[in-house]
Amino acid sequence: MRTTVKDVMTTRVIWVKRDAPFKEIVAALREYRVSAFPVLDDQGKVIGVVSEADMLTKEALAGGYDGMPGMITGLLRHKEQEKARGINAGDLMTRPAVTVGAEDTVQDAARIMYRHKVRRLPVIDADGHLVGIVSRTDVLSVFSRSDEEIRKEITGDVILDGLLTDPDTFTVAVKDGVVTLTGVPENNELGHEIVRRARHVQGVVAVRDRLSYLAAEYSAPLRARSSFPLD
Image (cartoon, rainbow, N blue to C red; front, side):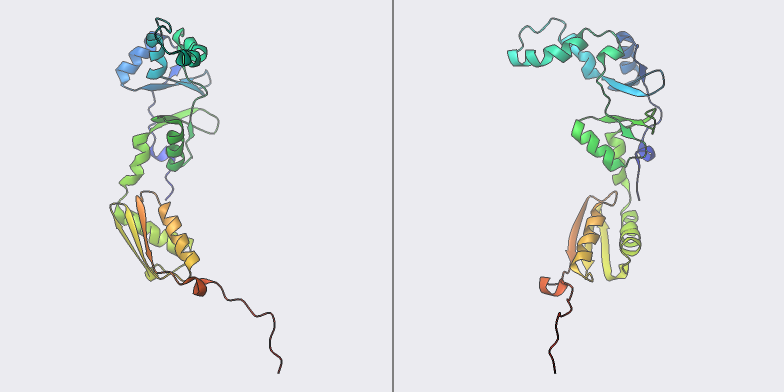
């Protein structure tokens, strides 16, 4: 199973244009109870994101930098001072926007969220147009898969179809998303590959490798002799 962002995203998205005034954005934040909006250009493409944090800059720095440590003042002065003077979404937004593609996997979205420390991502199509928004909760929804769904995917898609191996050779037990694998693989490489692929099955919380591996000297492929004794 390959769950993509479009499978879990929300398609009803609140957005603003670049020229949306400050007070209009504040009112929308309160009305829709969200913490950020994608900002779109006239073609409907995402050009930035304006958040509560961006807008808080105006209130926080309204009195200037008095009382702030010198180092913080220096870091803020160049970028944040412009936002403090901002009057519309274009002035206040963070750009470029951190986005994710509709065809990307939920794992891709999770990595982007983790790397950039954001709670949600605008979702764009191949042309950069806004098509939805995906949140941390949406991404984590893959863990709602049942244990039986996960077990069937590992035995059917991973072991049988993916590795062309008889799944009856192994026992795949799944409890609360934790997979326990037992059995004797044909060789050690096959066993390690089953474990690796099982870890990437969506909804798997952890994999317990209980496979019985061959000793190293027996798992290596046999090599033909390069010479033979003469009679």
